Image 1 (cartoon, rainbow, N blue to C red):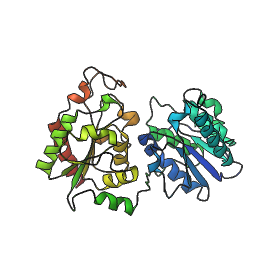
Image 2 (cartoon, rainbow, N blue to C red; image 1 turned 30 degrees about the vertical axis):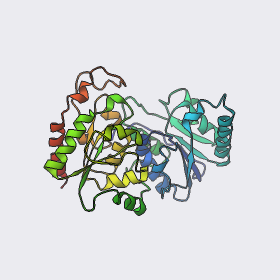
Image 3 (spheres, rainbow, N blue to C red; image 1 turned 180 degrees about the vertical axis):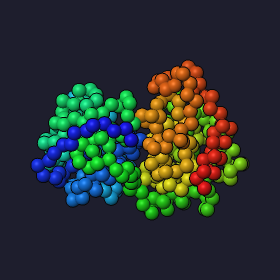
Image 4 (cartoon, rainbow, N blue to C red; image 1 turned 90 degrees about the vertical axis):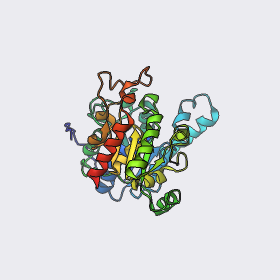
Length: 348
């Protein structure tokens, strides 16, 4: 782990009411889960809350290490200044944060709105990062050294954990998925048949491996490896799933059920996406397809060996638009199938 000198923050008494602010996205919330685990180990009797968007709340609702989930409609925040209804919602959220009587707030998001919300709690200790953006640092009482340009997200979050005396080990990812979620997923799948999960969606068009390659890979997984392809993702990913011969579960699982689906997958093949980070955290055999993004910063944590990329001179470019997308188009399905065979052999 990359070590950065982090001064420890002292408390007059152990924090009893703690708020984590990490509203989104799915992969970022997954990366922050080790901080929750370390907080619970260090402060076992504390009331711990997490402010999160509804889209990501399924990763936290019912979590055994969490006492409260506070929902934040991030997309509505920008219209609060003119929309009376949204303004009222923001007022209620601000009141709820103030009434939470938090004595410690961890702003893991590091943006203007998250800094503002940390300030609205009135907590005496509000911790952010030195590289926090949009002037959010003005709302923090303490700042932890970090650099989002050179450090993996998990390392940055662990630095904050270390700063408040919780240490940075063990790095564990716990999810609230239970047997009811697993039973619901089992009812969607053929009984006792091994399967591979394909995740063809991603929020950037440039991060998507061609759907035709996923379709070719699905046929190879079934023919050569005896695995039933299962296509997962959001309802918006149906347009990709319809082009792939397999069991289409896009939009049919919630986040807890998606975790259950990934738990039992023989292998997961995915674009750089939130569900890919869930699979990585679960320790599943994985192929993570990377092109325009930097796996050193946002790759599958501790799983660099699962990354499949070409390393072209123009990659990573961090661009959402590209006229050629060579970094992913030149990774062909036969190469991915060969890699899948090796991953399965090494994990058996």
